[in-house]
Length: 251
Image (cartoon, rainbow, N blue to C red; front, side, top):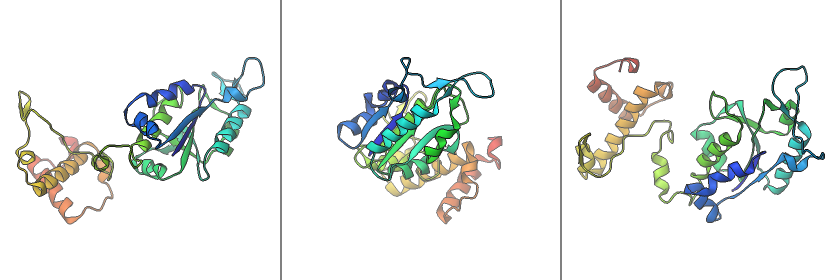
């Protein structure tokens, strides 16, 4: 997969590949990653990429010419079918479903804005806008890195045990179940007996029930409108009955 970030700080983005899954994926040739700096497409001695906003107001706005040139350069080096994605608080919320959609593409060009924002005319070269949350960052680089990390770990061969990805929170729209490892007994509690039983079917049901229950307690909105299977409905109802509450807000 070809990953490119249009950014004024390519060295910042490079930190993603210093280790971990993203770093190993790059070493194995699963991804081709790089950055394109709009400053390289300026024509003045100061390499100016921003200017004051028309209409007045605080802050500076990224200029249209160097950004469009940088995007064009990134597109020329990317495989066909690679979309241009602007990291923007006004964009579509990023979630696991979108990560899976992106992971199926030949590449991604992520545009990281800075300052007060980018010239609106840049959006004509953008295929979609994506947001990682309702808060303000100093720039789009960290948001782009979040997207890339979520996408890279879904690529075949990126994670040692591919099955582990299917057990992550949000993979199937639910929060993850609790996890335990050695020691079996600790001052803070014991590993649940079912996980020590060796009964794989009982373990599967317990994990599914815990996943459903945690979602109901902590993120009930994820269950709104979701059609549960008969087994899921029964497991969730048993979980709720055992708690003795009817509203997760009261838990």
